[in-house]
Length: 188
Image (tube, rainbow, N blue to C red; front, side):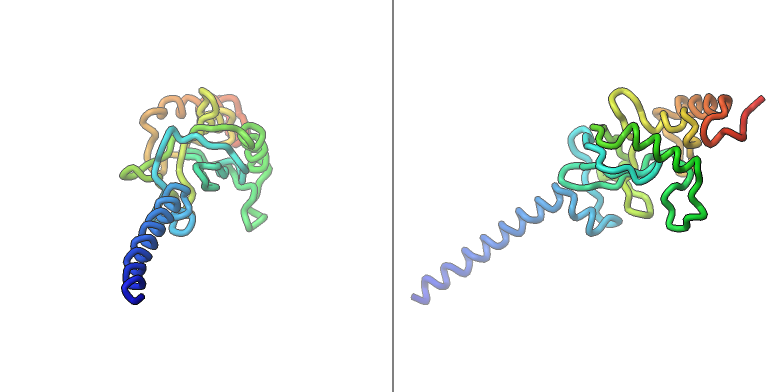
């Protein structure tokens, strides 16, 4: 009888390790490790970055269903005015309009995310939000925000080599037209 118990011990240990391995793989695949440890373990970039926009937080931050994860995404190279800041005095009408524009275009939409990456993992900002360009069909929504005047082209953390000229042209067009954040900054 003791011999049967000894046989069960190693088998149980192997099964437990296999089960934990499967759990670890699921955690990695689902993105839950990213939720628990966003600065240490960002999710891997897989497939073509497709997801559905679940919520628009403000003009430049959305939540996307990416794999099994509700992923917060900060749009790269844009910075809309505040609309949901905890200090209500920092929220602006232009920020609320930018958020409404983003909500109208993206909420519920299927999008393709082109993530900023480091060593094959999604790069995130200091708040744990994934950094990405958001594409809706053939349109780069980040560029659209700039072209419509809801944001300046932000290069504080480097330029977007692939779309740099398009972003500059979009910003110039918005500035000359006096749209959005450029309403008081028209060029002669």
